[in-house]
Image (cartoon, rainbow, N blue to C red):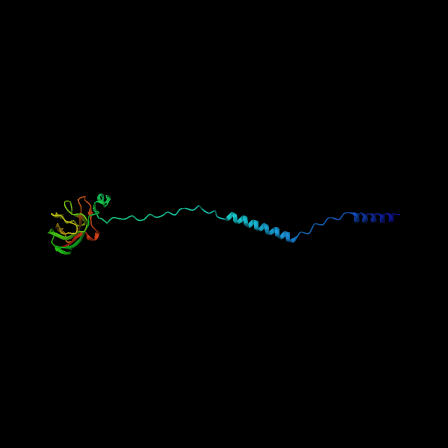
Length: 204
C-alpha cells in the first residue's frame, strides 16, 4: 500500500511539472539592429565633440589704409633751436651753392694770433634776391673770432658773389676748422649741408 502511494505521488509531481508553463526564453537580439544603433551613437558623440572644439571665428577687423607720405621741404640747417622749431616756410625761396675758395686754401700755415681774411665765391640759387639782412653766420668748429664782412650789394637769383670773414688764428699750435653758412633777414640759416663754407688752417 505504501509503495502504491509513493508511485502515485511521483506520477502527480511529474504531471504537474509537465503542465507548468515553461520559462519564456529571451528573444535573440537582432545583430544588425545592435550594430546600427552603436554606429549612430558613435557618430553622435563625434558630432558633439567637433562642435565643442570648433573655434568661433573672430569678427573681421578693418585693415588701416596707410596715409601717403607728405612732401618735405628742402633741408635747412640752423644753429638756433628756436629758429629750427619755426620751420622752413620763411626760407623756402632761399638757397645757395659753394663755387670756390678765393683765399686761404685748406691747410694754410699760420702763426699764433695771426689775422687773416677768408673769401669764398658762392651763387644765389634760390628765388629770392639777397639784400639787407642776408649774410654769413657761424655754424660749428673753432670760431677763431670770425666777423663776417657785409655784402654791400644786392645779389639777384643766379648771381655769384664773393663773401668774406675776418679771422684771427688761435694762440695754440694745432689744426683748426671753422664752418659758416648763409642766413636770411628772419635769422634762419639756409643751404644744403654740402655747401657749408669752411676754413681750415694749421697753427705752428
